[in-house]
Length: 338
Ligand code: AHG
Ligand code: MN
Ligand code: MN
Image 1 (cartoon, protein in one colour):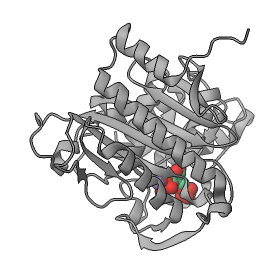
Image 2 (cartoon, rainbow, N blue to C red):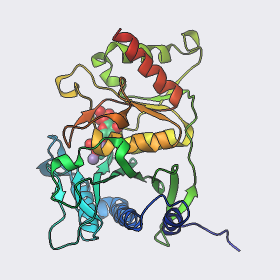
Image 3 (cartoon, protein in one colour):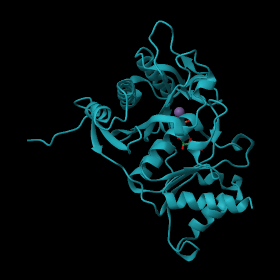
């Protein structure tokens, strides 16, 4: 007999019943997000056959040209989640302002934020891309949603996850009880639990950063990377390997699997003073996942999950992954300000 498989639905029911980690409304919300990711995966898999490669003529609020798949993925997530009755509002990388659930649908207490398609520069070259999402509980007692409703620190997230559209389609999820990985069974159309309680080793020999930005970095980042590059002959006394996929989901997933440190620091460029990645729907959900797996996530000067947001699309400096490396980077930043 084939071994018994735990589907996402069973896992979530279990989390609701035994662990009492989630309410039924949150369970249904996560299931809807997971279903939307399945629909995105189908589109990603069709590629040129469905005419979805390439760019639109539009720009998003960050001034980036939108890829067709950015827009399609955003629509899939919006349509799937709008009518379910569990949400008060949604916000996305691809929408300038938040979206309040229209009055024709029932409303719930949760807020959903997402990066519908992460790693857009990799769409047309057939490299792994993904979706990142964060769920917050609204404190507005079902009153009207405003931008302020969303501006909660990452510690307030009740769930976070990402999907990777790679050689296999994965969903990595936390509801605050560790991190669990589900693989999409494409024939059955179901998410199957394939790894429970993912853990990030505290030490690593692998780092991820876009080295082409080196000349713009601040001194603590330069110092840290210089030491890694010196390898066995330098102060670290060991050689480090480098990887950079340029899809945060893929880089973070590698770290979730075998450890490592991922960096997208702020730098001296006027466009990057605050950082590159977005706090609310990239850094916060990934930081919760990484911390839940025993790793750490820092801006260099503070824990990412403690950052008090002031804008929906605010950017943030990101160092995350194996704890001892992230702590070292934070220590170098602290020393530089003394
Ligand atoms: P997005 O495609 O959602 O805009 O995010 C891209 C992000 C992230 O996935 C990745 O780590 C980084 O941008 C890549 O940046 P560079 O092109 O500067 O390497
Ligand atoms: Mn992204
Ligand atoms: Mn994106």
